[in-house]
Amino acid sequence: MIEAPVRLRLNPDPGTTFRYRITVRQGGDSSELDFSTAVRSKDERVVVLESKATDARNNGKPADAQALSMMKAFVTVQRFSPQGKLLESSTEGPVQTNAPQSGSVVAPEFPDRELKPGDTWSAPVELEGRNEPVTYTYRGLETIDGISCARLEAVPSDKSSNIDPPMLVWVDTRTGMAERSVTRLRRGERTGEVRLDRLR
Image (cartoon, rainbow, N blue to C red; front, side):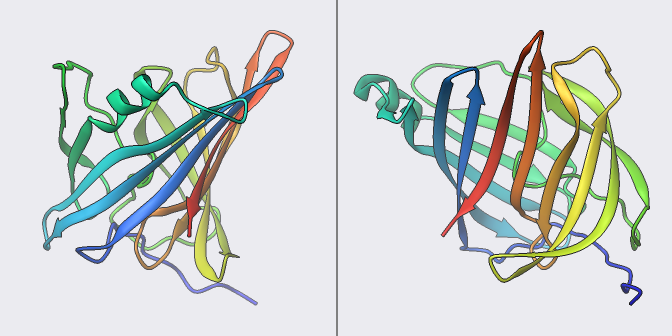
């Protein structure tokens, strides 16, 4: 059966809060960071997302209380186009930060056209602290937790990075928000994984 073309847009409902967990595993170590992303507002030109940490664990144990309290004090507000292009980003917290603008881990940048399996496009993604051009390929529809998702494969242009491509991203076709992503890591003989999961 041939799939109908899909058009991906960042289209979450205002007032909705998405909960996520980032899990990093490398060697015998693991860490988890839980965070929430709230949809502050949305119109035909701009989607405003507000993200903040809610919990953290290292090797299954709760993070240091003081460090976690500091993490929770930071709030990142990002403004995106309907295609997921980052327009503006700011972080408020106890200390000033001068981090470069980067895209969102929960909303990839989409092309302004319909997609069919095998179609590709390029967009910048923050990898290892810098913005890196990435080529996306749309692979088709899959269902995750009852949600219809577009499966994307992403390959960074920098072949010397610690990323073992392709990175995999599953995007809710209705909201344009990520449901899951998996990035494999390689550092010499050590391998690992960074995983994003939507929590419910």
